[in-house]
Amino acid sequence: SSPSAAPPAEFAGPSLRPGDRGPEVGVLQNRLKEVWLYSGPSDQNYDDRVENAVAIYQSYKAIQGDPIGVYGPNTRRALEAETSGRGHR
Image 1 (cartoon, helix red, strand yellow):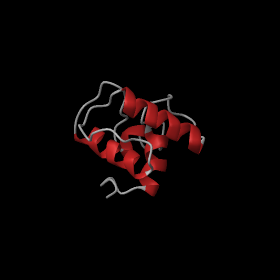
Image 2 (tube, one colour):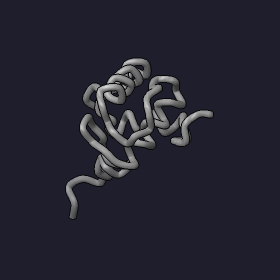
Image 3 (cartoon, one colour):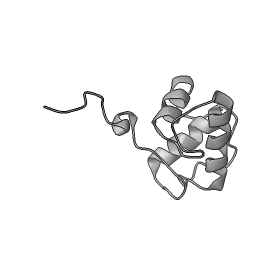
Image 4 (tube, one colour):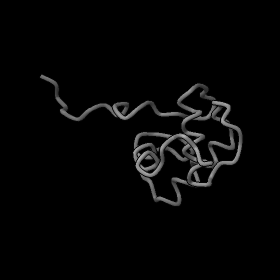
């Protein structure tokens, strides 16, 4: 039997970090726009603007357990709870 009953951290979705690219990053950019922390393009590129926005969000929400500027499971859980991922109009 498995020594741990806990689901893997990736259960909620992959961690995203600077240098990553793709649709998941685009959704993250939209979520950050919804909380007014990111005003750059939704270009699916995890650049320094995205990293800084994630770091500010982590600080504002006092999120523990994810590296600063990395969109890990704890940061994802908090941001997904208050955003749609579609951006604001």
